[in-house]
Length: 124
Image (tube, rainbow, N blue to C red):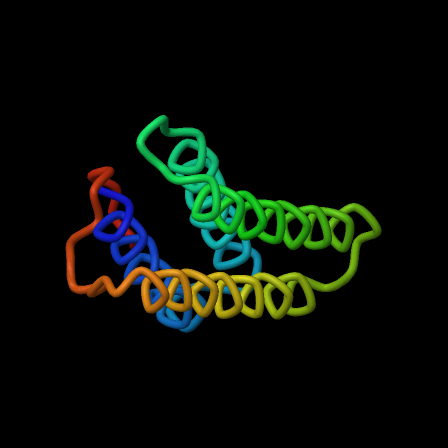
């Protein structure tokens, strides 16, 4: 269950660049925050599953904590009223680094990431 779900999360985040291209900076930042918050939630739930071994759970919690920190950084930039393009840049970097972390986890587990998004959400 973990491998296919992580693969789906990685594919979900692969759309971050198109989200940024297809919207104005503020709308794109809002959508990327939603996407990353969804990934954060799913990672936390996966890590807490009873069937997950301790080492995998630890790595998933670390990745979830990284996503949380990046979302907090973006929210802080918004709070101090930095331009939307600065917030968007932080969120794009967050999506990129989170996707890399998911892909590393998939590689270490020997899983393929070619599966669909399991939650039924759309990226657009």
